[in-house]
Image 1 (cartoon, rainbow, N blue to C red):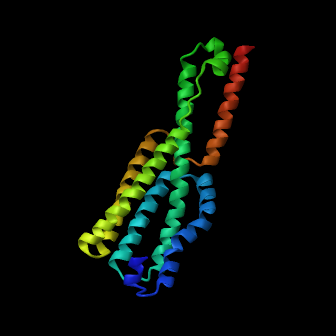
Image 2: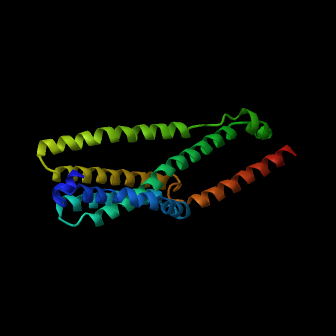
Image 3: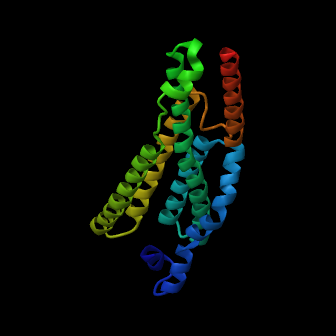
Length: 220
């Protein structure tokens, strides 16, 4: 808010605070809509790339131009909304497919003539979702602790907000690069993140039905 007051709203804390709240206000209403879109159409990794580039553009606009901040902050709010619903469900999607892969390997290594007993008793169910979310949240909280300290130090050393905005631009571009790598890895592993979640649920349901029918046939 201090940045907005210095550059656009000197002495007007109320207006600066209102404008500063735009991204969070937009994301509060837009997140459910974005969640439905991602569930139906997928493209999580691609959306992470787009959002990172938009965030970089917003900070570059705020730092390099005198464009009225309302419009860039609107785009920032939209990016926050899409980014959140793309990245957090991706963790569950990846873990679900990894757990399914481990389960299939365990079944493949077991006696095919005793598949029903193995699937019910001997296969140890992998549980990694809580660990994955715990590590992700820990990484997020670490970043939220360290990055403001770095930004504040940049402000002190250089005496202005231009360098701080360029720091945020750099972070967003690093995020875009990481998302490009994620997209490439995902494509080499079946495109799990790019697939619609609703379609994944239907395919998983069909696969479970086929496994169950196969088990009944072996048992009979």
